[in-house]
Length: 132
Image (cartoon, helix red, strand yellow):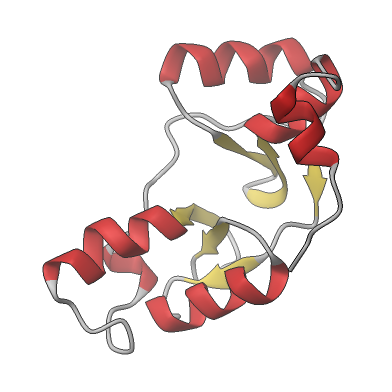
């Protein structure tokens, strides 16, 4: 799990989210509402496919317009097998880790590969230092 994930308010623009992803070398941000409660997740692909491809202005579109509300979350105490089960059965690559409604982490497919199969190609890619 990645602790203390990057969160942005639902009012942030797509441009702000894309810049934050670039600056932090990540592919997703967790979106929070005005009470800092998890509202959902936005990925770099969401920005491209749900907004840019439709001709929407990324400087004007708030994250609330394209956010995906997670059907499933994990608690910090859930075992790794629970994350594997949820990702496999729901075909998702990331699952927020929530405690008391607040995002405290995120588990990605790469995190699981690094833990479960570190010698696999995905495990090696996931643990390699960033080149950017």
